[in-house]
Amino acid sequence: MRTFKRDASSLVVVLAAAAALLAGAMTGGAAAVPASTLSPPKTAEMKPGPDGFIRRWLLLEPIPAAGLTDSIVQAAVKKGPFVSELTAVPRDGETVDMESAQLTWHAVDTSNYNVNLFHFARSLDKNTSNVLFWVVTVVHAPREMRDVRLAIGSNAASVWWVNGQEVIGIYGDRQTVIDDGVSKRLTLKKGANVIRAAVVNGGGATDFCARILDANDKPLTDFVVNLLK
Image (cartoon, rainbow, N blue to C red):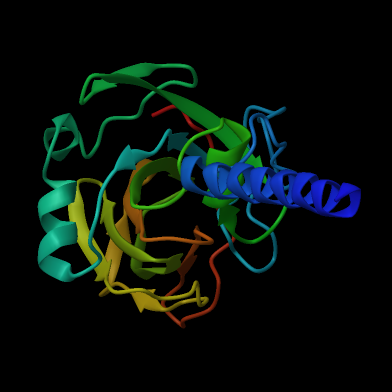
């Protein structure tokens, strides 16, 4: 009888632990798990590496969203205040009222080529599944740059704008692949150019990467990122 009670007690402990893990997965994970690849900017400007990836971004805390098809994602990105603010640049710490919740913009640098949104959300104890992330950066070009292309990858669906014009949309449950979506030829103006995206995740890992290709489809590195317009 003692053995049965001991085994039953052990089973209760295991089930409780499993329930805690499941609850953590549903809410984005344990509170305040550090995002090891993300950190606050420590300099005014950042240059891309030799691979051209943009590694400084403003990230908005996740918004509930469901569905990864083109029609559902397009409807989601047109909700709320952002559809009329595609060239606006928020400030680090700025807040936005969304669906009875106050969300905060966070400026981050990534040590990798990609930005890990799963770790970003988990570090804030936010949900990582069925959510939409708004992201913004500002590329400062030293001169007018013609015939360049924005090249991106995302997990999962995403829509991208350059200076207020939609240039890329990729949809469905997909993994991040470098240069998975590439815009038509466009022109970066001399000075500040605003790149904005909405990344929608269904479940599991979520991240994105972005770089600019020059007229010869080589990574462009002759610019700086400064989160001031």
